[in-house]
Length: 314
Image (cartoon, rainbow, N blue to C red):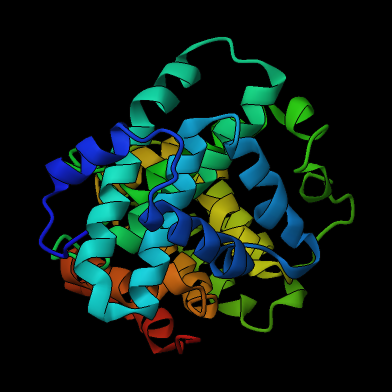
């Protein structure tokens, strides 16, 4: 297949080959099992991504397309000289997956299908981040109500809604080792930089920028969740957890670009910077901070100084 192949032609070719036996698909499946799955997983649970998800994909074409789409984007980072063809392949596979995925999502799906749907949903966030980071449309934009393309922040919230709504089913399948709820209380003192977040907590308490008390409460809850997550050792899990647990009241303030909501988001960027060794997150923390700095009023910018100064780990 030539690098000049059009997206439409590629889409037609893949759609006519549901067995995924073309050489490009075989290469991508091999790359997923030998490379992409290794960087998606926590090492002690690697077989979930390397074995269980591909096994599910043998029964669910939309999940197989999702595997191949993400594998293509990962391979494009490793072989940049093939990036154009690989990104076209990724887009084609994703577009083939979405109609079937949405159909299954709208039905009362079975326990077996539930695991496949959750697996595909888990691929959506890295797919958005990895595909957009190579385009002019940057992933660093602040989540908003008028996003013309899916935002990774909202995709994470959708994933967490799916998880909470199907927890008992998912806890009986391959994801069981990941869904053991911790019972030990988390001490903020585990995070040596927690005093910076404590100062934001005081800012919320004294701020007169809220229209009612409920807005302040929503921000207090949101920051409390972030402080707890930053005090945990599993920061990569926290990247996904926090957008999913913030209350709707905070999200409304964030969509309005309320200064306190933006300051809290800036401190979430510190978490992102700590895990930017993950291939699809590289540059996200600092770029998102730049977007926040651009839109926030100058009088609030001193609250961004500490997050901006924190190093990126990649």
